[in-house]
Length: 187
Image (cartoon, rainbow, N blue to C red; front, side):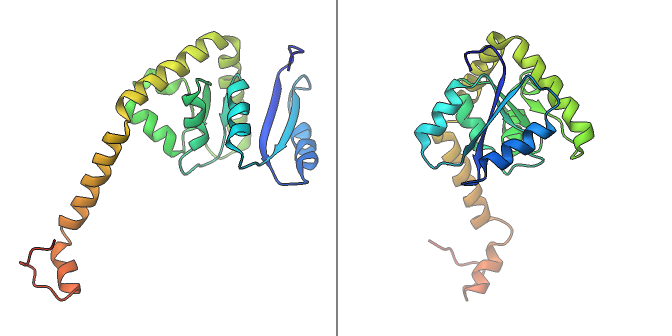
């Protein structure tokens, strides 16, 4: 890393298959100047956090991602992110950040490598050309999200959704299912 050459570290290789994955990635890489290293998946959060803290950019290029907790972890320590638009984290960022801020880290994807690879390349190049600005953007985004997404607010939202499901349009159906008349209050 101290050589000035970019380095791609891929965390999550299957045990004993890191070299195989590395060789596949090297074969796919368009740039011979990028050093590629693979690391096995580990449950050790300290090692994962160290990877994230020392990164210039965290990539989450999944074609789809249920949420993307690793992106949240990166923002929490101030590391810039580029994430797929097809993730729960992208939805959360679009919901709680201005569009110009969201566009800085959300990459549109089609599911076709030929189309998506150049788009990711442009986004990565843009971020890496001004890392100082990228780290500032990550800090700004983390601040915006932390103000809006507190545990108290999340619990309130969860409670309200639970309450609506209990008191919602199926309330009478649930009561009848348990042998209670529709007008009887439940605890």
